[in-house]
Image (tube, rainbow, N blue to C red; front, side, top):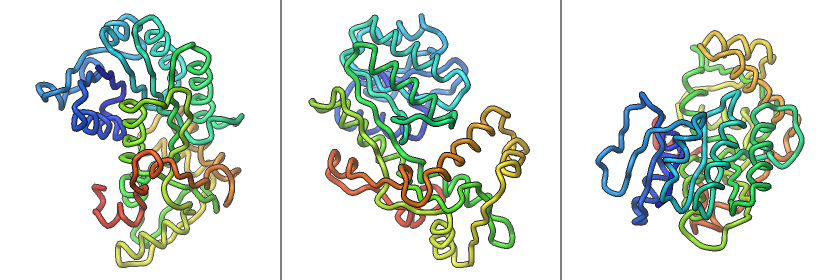
Length: 287
């Protein structure tokens, strides 16, 4: 039995599909109030629980051999992940696969990355067998966030500067996690998961223009303007600050730093090349 924590995320949903197709028995942790899309599906069991509730985690892990751990960004995420690691340590879990972030092997003031670094270190020191999957920024952000933000003049605004990012498709992250969960030999591994190329947002604008059949322009925006726009769109102040901090870190990475790293992880583990932005855009905004 494999427990998937974060099954409603894009990575988690794709992972559940892969595990079921591989004939694995899957249990998905769902918070109370979430409408289950998997109840009654063959091979998938849903249980109610919460990363903030250690008792519910203990119940969810009963009879589980392996765990996939992912959570949405939150100010309490480090405590949540420690709860899950502690619950796994007290159970019979033989492997915990954690979804982290590229760059979580270095000191940084960026909240998102620093939280993942702290969670990774806690898992590494837990005594559990583990695999840490560190994906770069998700390609799906382009059709889901960037395209809707393009204004009538064909302009979109980000605070990424000229940084180049080897953005990755969430389905490829799930494929790597599935291999780690279903094949032997991955305990102790740290997998940096990237797309096939590093792109600046200027490059993204060029590709969007070709896909959409009209000029698209990227404008580098000040951090304060981006923060204000995010809060105005309904994000809470913590999340807005954390997003701004992430893109500040990408700017520090620059055109050839850690965020531009292109790895062979997807092809090496799955046997197929990673998906590209052009391929994603060719499928339409739904990706």
